[in-house]
Image (cartoon, rainbow over all chains, first blue to last red; front, side, top):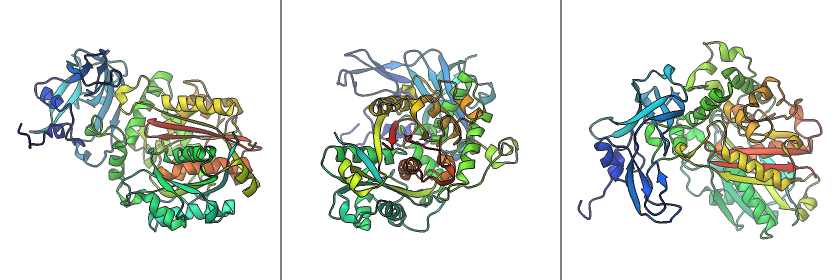
Length: 144
Length: 389
């Protein structure tokens, strides 16, 4: 990328992104590869999701990327029937918090899951989803 | 250290759409508080203006309001902590007075939400949380509280019926409050009849009846040191305890969704400073932006043990005649929730209760009151304990 070019990769995150430039822009490239990545401080070992560029414990930015893998446990969820501006055509959709052990992740549920079948404590996995040519997101999916 | 007292309170009517500008809206509360305290503008040493940005177009509203109030050349500043901005302003006024920097500080909160649509307003509220990692999923405030409601229901067996009881209480007292936006009493029929708008799903498990409404409104609270409070006021109400805390903005940073950790922490600080316990509170105003928020407040403030908040409302113990009267002015659910004005409105209600001037909803011989004012979904929490002595 040339020096004068603006690296606004993060504008590709989600249905509507409200941030375009961040030090963790590489998150988007990982999404393109089908990976959902957090970060880990190489100095103190603290893990972060969402990924952070800076560690508030060791006060440095010596970070490495680490993939969120395996199964998580559904902590809580809500299905939206009313949407904020910009999300009206997505309705209804379900947001959730899932605990993957080493980190918790906030996100949306795969619309293929019947919301009536949801139960706190159930197992879910996480996967990248392409909303369109440009926008990328991650969603929680059923464990078959 | 001397005491710090509240010597004047005022509030505009909370309405769906105020026919005037923000300075005119704020003036309604300002003039009422000034008349209540019988002060003139030269008696005010500084002002603090509280609201959440992006509902109206005015940047830096503190200067505009200070001018309109006739409070030049006294210093002013703008304070923001989302829906808890008003009590954050009062906390700062307390410290300005207690430090000796000023004798009398005026705190005015306002919000004119009707300048944008409801969907735009929800987008703003969603952006009051984590815009980088959560808003791209389509978040809004009812959904954040719904995550907590779902967890509370699953963990403790709380039901939609319990939540409806909170709204019914709110409606009962809202009908008596001439400053409230919604003044219609409700019965359980509104929550079981599928034709009723209150059963419309918003963000499961929360329904329309569980949610407060956007409103336009303003509030004003005048804070003074002990000497001035005694000189100016026959019935000063003293700030006995202040607690304030924060919690993770991103939901991924939370360990428990059946309560608000920041409210628990702020409550502990306020009880400690005031040297009182939950059982000593005669009347409380809690931040019921949603029915579940009031239920969690019962537990987070120690009025009920965790999981036992529903039992309190089922037994009607939070009505004016109960063990711990809560939101007997109709709360946010009936008054409406003009973000920056809400905290000051809650404080006004408790001040009137402790003065014995609360009208039909007066709690008999109330001497210690509590205010619980939350910003975002427990991102910010302020708890304040007020007393007659």
